[in-house]
Structure formats: C-alpha cells, structure tokens
Length: 529
Image 1: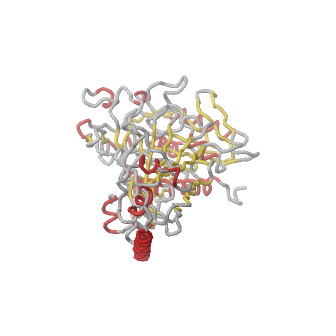
Image 2: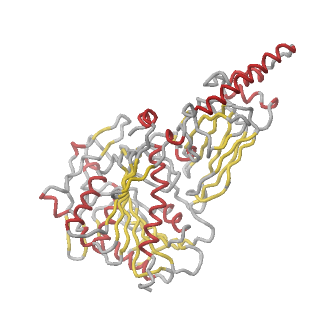
Image 3: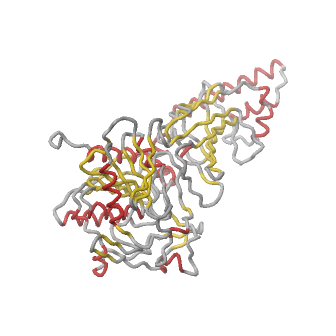
C-alpha cells in the first residue's frame, strides 16, 4: 500500500509473523493535522483570538511592523509564502527560539527527543536535518510543523503537516533524509567517528533549498555506531579477514558472524552497533578486501567454516554454537552456513535467495551450480535504476532443484526477515518456499517476519531508505550478465524498493526482533549448562 492510499483509508500496514499479525502504525494512524476535531477547534479559537487582538491594535492606532504582519498572517494561510530569508532578516526583533535534541550524543539506533519552545502560539515552522558522509556527500530532510497554543513543539506528539513525511514521526527527520546526488547510499565506513547531524529551525515554511536562509536555532547531534568500551580486534588469521567487536567485560558473549552482500569489502557499522547490545560480532569480508579475491567468482563455504571456527575458539565467545546475521547475497551464504555447518545454531536471513544464484558453490566434495538468470527479464524503473526482481530463474522448476539449499538439514533456528516491496530479490516467495520445504520434512525451525512497504536494504533503526543505488564494480563476477551486457553495465544503479515510512517502521521493529532471536537461541538453558 502506498502512502497516498494510507492517507485515504487511515489503515495501518500489517506485519505477518507466522500466523500472527502485528500492526505497525503509519503517519495516518499516528495523527495528521485535520484528523483531530478538538485540535481543529483550538486552531479556530486561536485565530479568532488573534483577529480580536488585531482589531484592538488598530483601535489604539498602533502602527503594525512587517514582523507583526507576518506573524498575524501565518495563522490564516495554510502555507507561509514568505521566504525563509525574509523571516530571518527580522531575527533581531524576535525572541530567541529554543531547539533541543536529547541526547545530543548517542548510538545511532537510539531515538532522539526533539523539542522547540518559545515560539509564537500556533506558529508554522520548518525543521530540517542534514549530514555529510565521509566522502562529503550531503543528505538532508525537512518537515513542516505548527506549534501548539503555548508556543511549543514536541515531535513525540506533534504531527508534521507536510515536507518529507507527515504525521507523528519522532525520528522522521533522520530516516527521511535523502542524498543530494542521485542514487546515493548512506554508509558508515569508520565506526570510530560519529555522523554529525545538524538540526535547523526556521520560523516559516521553507519549501525551497536555499543556502542563504538562516535558521533561527540549530543543534548538532552525534550519531555513533560504536559504544565506549567496545573493543575492535582486526582479524587476519589463515584466510579469514574481518573485524571482531567485543563488548566491555570478561564475557563470555554470544557470538555472531555478520555478512553483507554485493557491496563487497569490509562493512563494520552493523557489527559494531550490535556489539553495543552485548553480542560479540565478527564483521566478515569475503571479497574485495585486502588480499581476498577482487571479484566474487564462487562461494567457497570452507572459508566461512574457518571463520565460524575462529569465532568459536575465542575465549570470550559463549558456545556451543554461533549465530549468523546476513542480508542480500550474504543471506544466501548465511542460509548455506545454516544448512551445512553444525557450528551455526541461529541464522537471520534478510531479503536473500534460498537457492544458489550467479556463482558456483563448493564445500568439501560438494559442488553446486547456480540457477540461470535471464537478462531480458530485467525491468528499468522510471528513475533509470534496474530491477532484478524477475530476472532470476525459478527454483521451483525441476531442473533447478539441485541448486536449492537443503534447508531441512539445518539443525539451528532460521529467521527470515522480508521486505514485501523488495525490488531486487523475490525474497517473500523464496522464504515461503523454504518454510514449505521445512514443513514437508516435518521440521518447524523456520519463521518469517513479513513487512509490507519495506524494501530490500533493511538496516538498523533510523537509517534513511536507500531506494536505489550504484554498487561497486568489484561485485560483478565474470559470469554475471550485468557485467558483460552492452545494454546494462554494472555502472547502472540497482532498484531496492521501499516506502520511506513503512521501511523505517520495519527497520525499528526488526532490529529488536533480531536481538531477541539471538538472545533466545544463543543463550544456553540451565539444562545445557
């Protein structure tokens, strides 16, 4: 369901958890201005009071200033057509507005409480957020709000009336940020430094992006991906390359291997953030990093088995098994680990295939060939990004069955986390097929969380939606049609999908579910101790 239809129907999208359905509130269910009769009555009352005050001023013969007029008019027009520059030019004649964001320094998965005080009653304002990534690329968002009768604004209660989102969204300024450059994806590469998010307040509706507009108040918020005391241990043992994040303390801690997909290299932000919650997490690189292969030409499961054994052998890791957190191509590998490695007792697969695609698979004497893909089935979005949703072959076809992972052999628990608007992988259908495969063998160790409106790249909470982005050329294997086609080169952006508000709700909910899942299945019971 798109955002427009949500506004029209007032219904919430739902999340299917097995046979259970959980409501995730959207903007319309959290309250959009105009849906609250009492609030509308208060607005009318305030306007009548200001009208009476203006009549009294004229009776006394007072000459109204330009600032007086702008403040008076703001209550009558749904949009303040005055430019931000004009509003800020009178700053010396107006009271100082107070913008607070607490905590000003926190982990990136922690919410921030944003408040504004000392505003004129029912004042229309713009709140904006911006940050620059480590390459200097700008991401920003804005939303329009109206202060209450006391001249205060609390984003935990006040609905945005327009901008990049609507309704009560306390963290909307963070998850609705968009890149200035087309097809950008916000990624934290250096977890030793925070993202610096600048929050700006303008005392009018700023519907334009102007470098000359001066905010009436500003606040900088630090968003960290590594908590104090977390230890980062570079891993370079045997063939294994990565970084191990250990929580403070003696342990032992539940151990997890963290796998990303076609992005390649070493991606650490999710592992370091998860370590802040009491897990020992190995961010594992498997191509395009240091002396690892530059291109992913095959999946050698013995490399991942070596990494699992290395993690289990660490003195601060609690056995007898480990978990795997995986997304996209990494989720395909994560599922293979669950099927073939006894060390893996809990696996989270986020929007990935349940069969082998693109590359051959090897494990000891076993060799599996990938299911073929079909270039002509790719679809080009209006943005120019390419959707791979339908280009892969069907694992249900008889000839492709030999490339389907034997999920019934998995001894541990498996959690599929699925974005229903995934435009890159038919992940919902794949997860359903995997669960049916388990059921047909009398197994019940699989579970699926289905998030309507969520896209492919589900990340930790409050991360902006990446609807489409370019992937690095190192992720293109020689046998991948994308790498050799004259019409579709790897330089074209890929479509990931997702509605911003629904995707944000899914990220926040699934992050908690991931932690609960690993705590449940990586913590030994008393009978095991």
